[in-house]
Image (cartoon, rainbow, N blue to C red; front, side, top):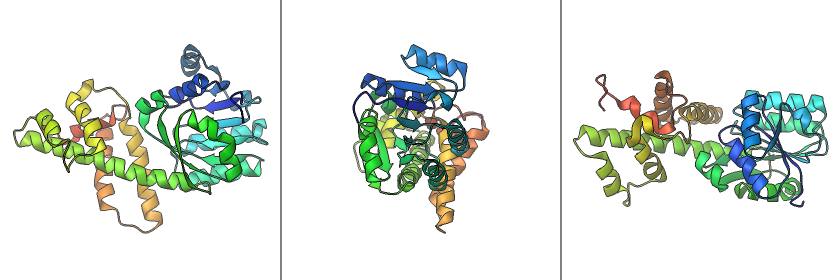
Length: 293
């Protein structure tokens, strides 16, 4: 595959748009798909031609999907099969949708004549913007070789298996740890305030020690910023993803009480109307009725 391979990119949201922009910067012709006119306008402002539906991807030989959930993925696949933009193409499913959903979509695409790569991402908006996402990639060797240059334009591909679904399984484990670490950081900082400590001082003091974690260092300052924190990864993402983790654990009969506790906090944050806020806002579930933690 050469740098002139035409890429279709379905899903130009907060993470999808910078990913598509990385492809353009790497020299790939890109046609984006977004049903919302505002989304297409944003894509145009970023130098990306965008259409309303997958029927506009006839020229694309690689089609990347970065939609919000399994329902949207199923809709995209059904529309693509109906529009005959599947056969002879390689589809790369980069959404976090869970193992069963990606296997179902992959089977439908393969039955219609496509090769399929499973490649969910980790890193959020910031790393998507820098083009250095971590990609958990699985699929047949030929398909992986075909799309490797496309993947490398968006981040670091880590080959995790040969079957569609292996990438999603790794992402489920990843999201388990991310969710737990974010909530642990929030709880610890809330505890520091209750103890009369300066949480900023706590972050500085313990940040380089045994208690340090990526999430504490990354989310901690945003937790202290409160409502002023930039939205780099929404609470709603972890409501969805902790549900996928819980489903995966239940499917293999694993009791996961730590995950359940973290999930309860994200659900509580959503109930407070924080779904579209940065995931660091989960710390607000530790507020007292008087507004103090």
